[in-house]
Length: 129
Image (cartoon, rainbow, N blue to C red; front, side):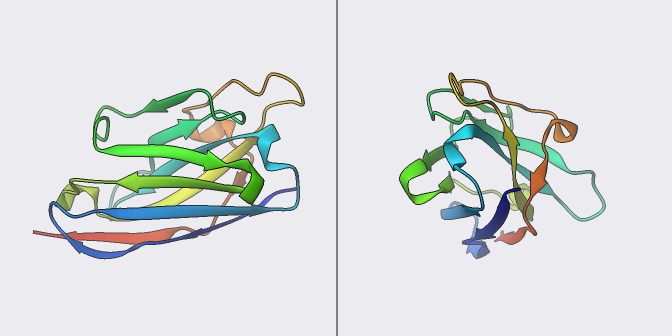
């Protein structure tokens, strides 16, 4: 079992930056691939970014590529999402999620919501125009 807690959301003007954090507890976090998803009002939850357990592989949605950066610090049991050049359409509740990826290579990442086993409660990001 992994418990995930997001933080770092808030209100920011368009063009600004925020850094989201996902703190994990309960298991060795490096065994888990981790992703960020978001859900805007009236819309379905969508994939944003993902990182493998060893931190060596990342993947982004087209809508955030070049603006957002996902990273992790396994010594601190944390994954981060640095969001730059924010746009009003980035407004959403952001969730982190984790999936056990084994004890050895830990090099996979996952982009489908239903592949993830553990979810945080979300943090609100609001970008004003």
